[in-house]
Amino acid sequence: MAQHLYNSHHEMIIDLAIADRNLFEQIEEIKTLYQSDTRAWVIGFSGGKDSSVVLSLVYQALKQLDKDKLTKPVYVICSDTLVETPVVVGLIKKVLNDVEHAAKRDGIPLTAHLVVPDVKNTFWANLLGKGYPAPTKSFRWCTERMKIRPVTEFINETATKFGEAIVVLGSRKEESAARSASIEKHKIDDSLLSRHSNLPNAYTYMPIQNWTADDVWQYLLSAPSPWGEDHDQLFAMYKDSNQGECPLVVDSKSQSCGNSRFGCWTCTVVTKDRALHGLIDSGEEWMRPLLNFRDELYNSSQPENKEKYRNFRRRTGNIDIQTKYEPGVGRTNEVDVNEDGSVKYVPGPYWMQYRQKWLKELLEIEKNIRDQGIDIELITRDELKAIRQEWLNDPVETDIADSLPGIYRSIYPDDEIMWHKNDLGLDDTSVLGTLTKVSKNHNLSLELLKKTIGIEIEASGGNRRGIYQKLEKLYSQDWGEKEEVLDRIHQEKNELNLFKDKRDGFKLMLESMKK
Image (cartoon, rainbow, N blue to C red; front, side, top):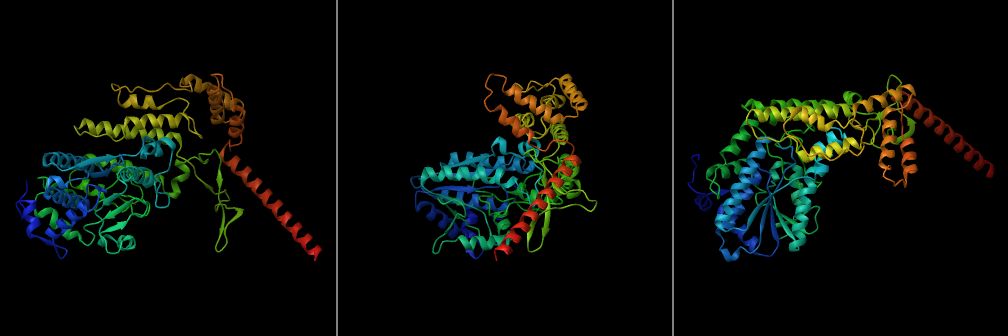
């Protein structure tokens, strides 16, 4: 353990003042608030410096209370998106384990909980499974699914059980003007609490809202934690990466990551992930393949690369044609075109070939890192099963060859997963070859042919109810080569607009005749 200014956390609390306030007063405030009602407490812990301070302060306050005063539970909740920066995940799990072990020793009703997104809402289930494009500032689909929902569900369950809940956060006004404004907006007059911006039965308590970053580090480095560990590893991690922490996000209005803070190693909202770069430069060379993989995902989200990586059809099976935008008017009915005259459209999901390629690369990276003696799981096996089902039932590109089990076996030949039976029954490569030949000979879309057969197989058990509606919906989608479909839609749009113009002109003529 490193040398500290104080030999114990209790000694520091008695002597040190931070943000113009003695820490002893801060601890007394927490003790008083804890005993003031029966509402359960939920501490938002991200593993970073600010949430580490809050966890430490609350633990010390509880430790000082008599056992008969510890009448309600305190839950330490941490959101694991399953794509967190690996070194951060390791530190978080160690801290949570140490804190929970110490709480049992000290008789404190504090437990740690790591919440994760539902398997259908993970990063890989959406990006590799459904083909969602890598998140951008304008389409950040990840935060709601991966962070807000799991945390919200936990807080709601706690609030339902105890009537209300108090969420203890490490938010600080100094972090940003937006954060300061948000804190002031939801503050309750003459109270230590603020209204939760999204959950009606929850309140927030921010004990270090007036602290500076220097205050935080002074607290963390001046003494061991109240559960007996130091924060040297946390400080070294920040020093190596020169980044801040990714806060626990509890509502859609809270600022998520996206500015190279510690968070998801897959984050493509930023141009350059300086946190990963910093960790690699400090000696974590084994993480370089993660950075390269992340950079490829980032490149796929750039406007000039969208046509290469993404299908021209949306997941509805149709093409979303872009219309012209006129300032002050908005979108018009007129089809927008590029400089070369080609029709502009909104690209759809990633092509299946890239999803397959990236999955194989991800598993290869994971296997290589494991071979170096590092225990890591970049994608869970439950996610692989979810992705496989997404591929087999993809609304645009059906993986008729059922390629995922084969991809996994090529990387982990001795680690067989119990896969569910392929309901399509078309995983034979000879069948795929035959279908490809039929589609070419009869000028049919291979995807349309595969999906037609899939609907028939689905109804082969005897229940054919609704099969004609399914086929009608399937055939109404935009099948065919891109240029052919775009030209057809463009022509239909022009004809429709011409009809509307004639109709409007006729209406005007009738109106003038009435006058």
